[in-house]
Length: 508
Image 1: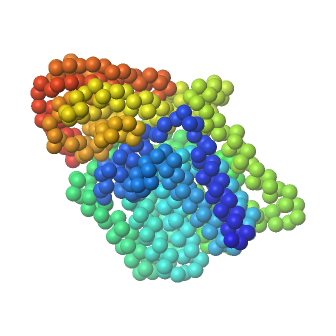
Image 2: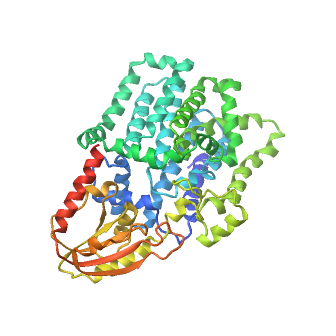
Image 3: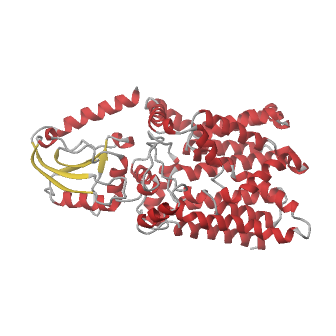
């Protein structure tokens, strides 16, 4: 292993270690992670909320032992591979070890660390965007058509991971037309490459057609309940903070496309960023949707800074450029990561009330960041559901019906009861409910606002509230666990009607 590869291995090792250190042991997995993990047991070419790639890694996690270690491993891996691609981009551009190391440090100690602590499609999405840009860079540099086909592969698998990559393509088209690289549209291999991307994405497109395009329902719900609370100015403002410790490297990259002659032929990356940000702004996208735009720029920015500091006096500033991202990351970590328990985070907030990111999707300010509140209370919930299940006759079918996918997925992940499966009418679970057996007992898991109605209790011989989620810092605080024993009516029929009603809603 040569010196440069040894350094790359060292940075990747730092990346993995850091990802595990950024989460205090008192936190559970995140609400969204449970849904993705349950997809491992229902493999398909698509889901209501996401395409299939995340489910493939969920299945790998299941095969590897279904533990939190492996849940955290894969997003860290995708982050490490993103760093490796930027490292290789600098290598292609002829950059030195300093430029590679600087870029690696900027990416490790950035908001990528926040995304890479969660098992969601976002980490692979950023990797896919970076791979597409890396392939385009390689094509511009070499003119070899193989890079166009690899670009198509990146777009195809990126689409199978998250539809967000379509915005990268939409931003690239006008960017290419605006620069000298417009000649790419005369290359028939470009269209063959996008044909390859289409073939890779085709199984999911067929699934969407067969299931009446649930992605449209998901986008409508997203727009109605989440994006409506997104301010366009806030979206643009967020872009400055994702890499706040190394923003000077990004600015140098944007400047270098016009002032540094070796980089002028790569101006397409500048314009792709501008056009994509404009599209995202128009659609009121969440700020983090655009993070995939930035890693490739660190290849150019780090190299340009290395060029500017090439004289002897620059040797004094080179270590400073490396220290700044690390130092600012350490200062921001207490308010940006769940490195301490909730009470610790609240103490930090009281000292820095204007710095905590505590605005939730509902547009309101809360005591903790939403992501952190979504990582609490799940083990307690699963334990109380296990207690409720232990009170039901073992020879009868007891179904656990939850209000949301986080509850159902968390119960399925943390339960100590073999074979226990919680379901919900929320998200993909509506397609996973087993009505093949006669339901005799029901465990209801209800959000505090909903409660359990007298009508529901009247369907059963016995009723008992087992408990509630007591963690006041959890988003699920107050969630009720209620046991209903001995059916007096056809519960299967009631659920079948509710399932059909929900599916009809998805088909609208």
